[in-house]
Image 1 (cartoon, one colour):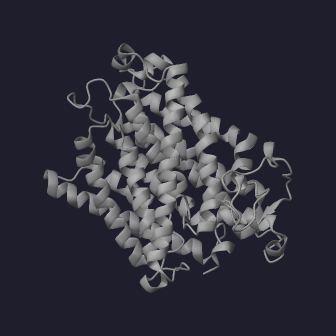
Image 2: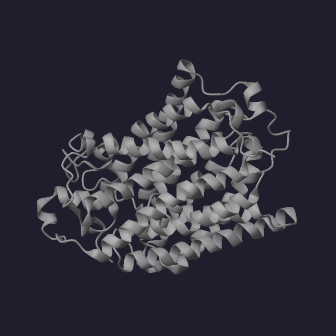
Image 3: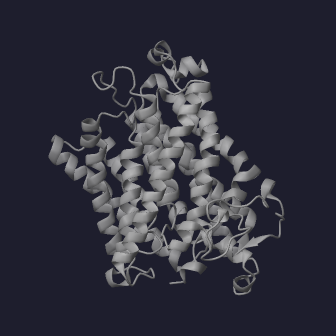
Length: 439
């Protein structure tokens, strides 16, 4: 296993910024690594469109399917441009950073890479083109706000959603990505937080934002007394399958090389996902008498989420345990907890991504230890667990507070929610003047 500072996507630009370390890295293009990263990038984009669009689209009512899919497509386009203009710079520019020194650059990247300044066809990150790394990271930035859509589905104005995503991406996603993956000098990187592929940056971030959003917007009209079953679980299962396949690019691609780390990440991703799917299904079967298609699809995603931060550092047995725990706990959070607390997380963005991300982040600190079959540099499990917990706490508080402020300001300025009549009619007609089905 490579040293932490020489492995993972977040370290690559840090290497380029450090002359002493940069001399040790490969400086010629490797066609195998390049091919793998090109494929991984396509797989991660595939997770959002069409994967997440179908997964979420099938779970809403038929009058809202186009609105959810439209949000996924619009977010893909919007974030792609924001990433090119300034997002990449805010997340990965290392200007002013120094290992062990806490300053403004520990929380947010610099502005030297605005508009992708300095990028050429010959620019390399590790052994593959920097352009590929930029696009790979772009796909992570795309799917994170798209996940939030599941929490406020069927009731947020399309215009408000676009402004919210743009501001949230700038003030929340980019700083968290920098703090975790920015390399030496970044806050949580210096702490030693282990997040191989985005448990903190993507899933806890999106899950907490989703929870805040659904609380601020309020419940859907008629919830929970009016039945609101998914209108097409076939779409949801197809979307879940696309997420499962695409996640190999998400996790194994985060090795940023076609090597043994990528291979192990792929294996543990499959194991954890299978365990979570069966765990959710089993407990639903015991609780409700029958296993459901929605349940196994949700269990699949819970396992994928939980193994994400651990994919590069845990072994097969650790993955099995992480998967089982995430499937069972997320089942109860997405069902019993939501009903008891009364919030309307429409498609369980928090119950699966927020809770699953927290479970994965914490268990990474345990099962990354070589003593438990892991491959991380974890000699003191209690210490690493505390480091992971600190990372979770900072992410939850920062994301929760800033998301709340963004939403409240937008609500005052332009309003967040469609009118009751528009909600009853459905967002497909009210917001886009189209129908998903013309029967």
